[in-house]
Length: 283
Ligand SMILES: O=C(O)CNC(=O)[C@H](CS)NC(=O)CCC(=O)C(=O)O
Image (cartoon, rainbow, N blue to C red):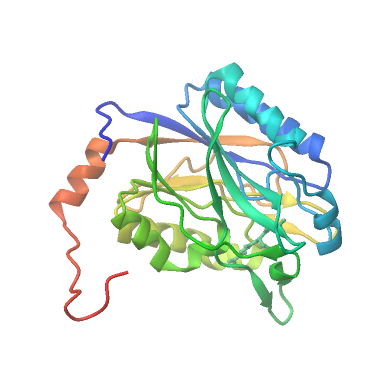
């Protein structure tokens, strides 16, 4: 497991994506600039940073392969220019005629080195609340991405609704993750009720840093996201508070969160969570 002796700062970005990819890229590039100026070692951007569409049909019409997407190419060139790795959620074409909801790691030299595809799709119909059928336009991911080494630590990648399932986070922790990422676009009512307790629970039960880059504000006439971007440390304490979480805000912003992997190892050493796998199955 990588061990970094000095604290590092990571930037966690919040934007309000619309169906205008060029505008979304420019919001993200503003955040790359801010993150680099603040001395961040990595920038984490929300789910679906490339676009949030008004319908399944519109999402299918906007999707582009990562290899030729001007949105991805723009971020690759920003990463290279600022020598800053970027973790960003986007859409990619799927094999089934649907899209894939993915998360890519762009290295500080602008290469796409890792890719995760969202496992759990958000199909809900809450009376008087959100009605969303993600599976109408998105195909579900086939596997976990094993944790990968980065300048801020070993990253375990998950996306948004995946946050409600403890199993993948525990599996990634067991495989060596030190930081779990949940780039998101939570709805306002479910975010108000569950966002922070879920993030804190995942951090505490995996004894890992949790990075929560969120979409915020009004995307179109049908969609508003909860925001409240930030980080949670391995004690479950929220970091970067105040910088994020302006409900309804649509200004791009970054929250800074500190990572101290020495402290993380101390927490894990001092309170080992040894599982009773003789009683219940290991995840
Ligand atoms: O639509 C896109 O293009 C981007 N994807 C999303 O916004 C996804 C699927 S609709 N949103 C969530 O998973 C919200 C989960 C949530 O709000 C909860 O678990 O409570």
